[in-house]
Image (cartoon, rainbow, N blue to C red; front, top):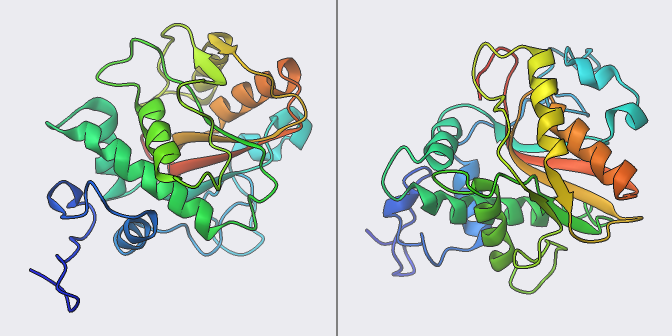
Length: 255
């Protein structure tokens, strides 16, 4: 099937593995395609964690949003969409290798990250450094965060955004730690797991005085952004930390 220009028609997300533009698509094209299928953030959502709110000005139920910025160690976390069908399934497929070729989602997610940056250029114009929240060096099936950040770096071919060079990482994880994903994990357990995660991280480059955008796959409680943000600011001397995720998990949802 082709469109008016005689080029192959674009398949709708998440049919990306069969799309003619899987390997040579643009950030704008992939972002527009995904936006037509994924569930957007609610009109009324928390300005700190992007959680859905019942009405404008409603109080967010996320514990960490009540903390002052200094204690929280991050300003806010934006999300491309809500963690719901079909984005939820593709993230799980990619993260856990549920299908053959699922690593290919790293390229698509990299494009979506850069597409979001282009669409929100004014909001991130002051960002000095964009890095991923590291995964363990022996994580299987892949280091999913590093893979999509490498793709994002490659997709930003003109270097418009300060995405860290994947071959010269700023922040690395030195060992595997307790996982906090999944249903039934309590808030304090997620925080303990996040503290273990941050303790296993190592800064490889100077981030003093920088405004950092920390990228992850999903946001549930904000525990990881709190502990990693604290590391970047207290040990690294970063000026501030903001976040960006592929998806925001609704209250009661499972990542």
